Image (cartoon, rainbow, N blue to C red; front, side):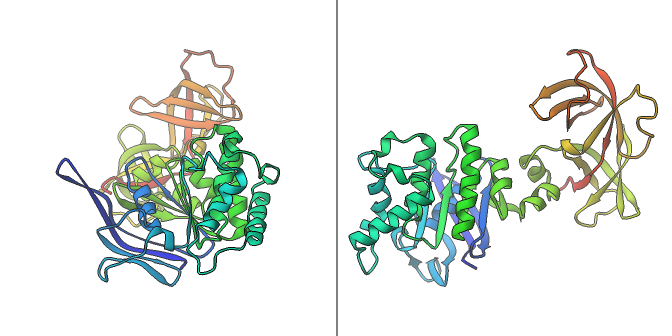
Length: 374
C-alpha cells in the first residue's frame, strides 16, 4: 500500500465535552489510486486528512506513508508535515497574492528541506513543466491575483505537485467554483491524477464529485467509515439507509421480510403488498427492512393507458403531484398515499397541467433490500 492509517483516534474538547472527530479509523490506499473521503460536515473526513498530513496530532493510532511510519502513538513517533513528502491543495487555494504565478509554483522548491537545494535551472524547468501540465504556460509572470477562480485552482494544483510528492491531499478543492467550472475542473483533475499516477486522497461532501472522480469511496459518518467500495458498489449496493440516502437519492418503503423465492427476498409492505428485492447479506424472516430503489430505476406508466403494464410485483399505484424539469430529465413526485415516490425519467408526462394529480402506475425495476436495524 502507498499509505495506511491504523486505528486512528482524534478527539477535541469543547466546553469540557469530548468530541470524537475520528473514532478508530483504519484505511489503506494502493499506489496511484484516488480515494475519496465522503460525508456530511463534521463527520471526521477533514480531520482524518489533516492527521495524514501532519497538521493534527492524533491521540492514538499509526500512519504509514510508503515504507515509513510518520505517526505511531505507541512508539512516540510524529514526523512533522514538512517532512512527510505530501502535496496539499485546500478549498481556499492558499496562493501567495504578492507573488507571480511562477514564484507561487517555485515556492515549495525554494523552501524545500531536501538535502540538495534545487539549482535555479532545475526550478525553472520543473515550474515550466507544471505550468504546461495545468495549461498556465503563458501566465508565468502574471500576478497570481490576476487569475480567474479556475486558473487559481489550477495554480494551486501545480504548486501542490511541483515537488513530486508521494501523496496528494485535496480538501474540497473545487467547492469555490461555479457549477460549470467545477465540472470542467473535475475532468481536468481526473486527467492529471491518472497521467501522473499519483496516489490521491480527496475530501468532499459532494456525492456526484465522489462518484465521478474516485477509484474508491469511503463514506464517513460521526468519525467512522460506514462503507468503503468502488463508486458502483457504493451507489448500487449501499449497506445502510444513511449511505443510500447520502450518495444520490433513494426511495425507501418499509416492510417485513416474509421469505425468499428464486434468489429474491420478499418483503411485505403495509399498503403495497409483497415487494421483491435483493439483499447484499442473508436476512431472516420477520426482520424489519426497507425496499429501496433509485429514482432512475422507477418506471412510470399512465394508469389510463390500456395494457400499459400487467399487474405484477413491485408495482405501485399513485398520482403524480409534482414534476421538476431538470433539462435532459424530469423528476416526478408520486403520491402513494402513505409515501412519496421519486421517479426520474425523460418527460413522457410533460402534457400534465400543474396541479392536475395524474394517476400513474410505478414499477420499481431494480430494487435492493436494506436491514432497518443497521
